[in-house]
Length: 112
Length: 116
Image 1 (cartoon, rainbow over the protein chains, first blue to last red):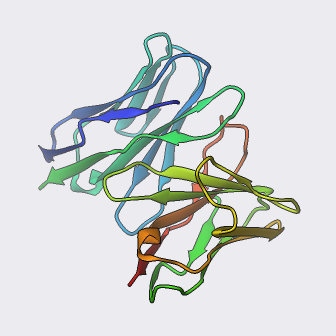
Image 2 (image 1 turned 120 degrees about the vertical axis):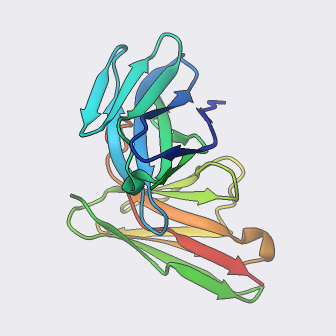
């Protein structure tokens, strides 16, 4: 059974601080790693999809890296803003089934 | 970007009631849609994969007679929770997109189901 773990479960940061979260996953049969941003009362919004070891993706102040050999991905937010407050989900898919297995998310609260 | 509409957003009903949840892709055709369930403090768990024009594929432990899925058109999939009981109370959310696993999914807003 594929298990995707995210840490921390939640965190509070001050506006302007930079922060990062971790997503770990079994590296065998890895196919793709997805990051989503999920604001309360809205639908999850896709941030990044990464497939290759060493991949780095960036969108504005948010970036992500991927290490498929050791089975982890980091999501970084530079200069956090209150509007960054959301739950950040990662999901992994494996070759063969292509099913999305989600972590429990990291709930970020940026304090003004 | 692609938009998925899910309705209703909230349902409160008595035990024994059947509840239908709709998931529509508004600006693209979705041959595959996914239905997830999330219990408090747990991750989104895939319940079933809905395929247009054919039977849904259910995950292990999900009763197909309890959770009826219909995907009769390229823009609409429905999940019906039949004879719902309090243990079916949960957050249900659909997504649409490629089934190949390397493309982002487009999610609905979810449905909070509470069975009294």
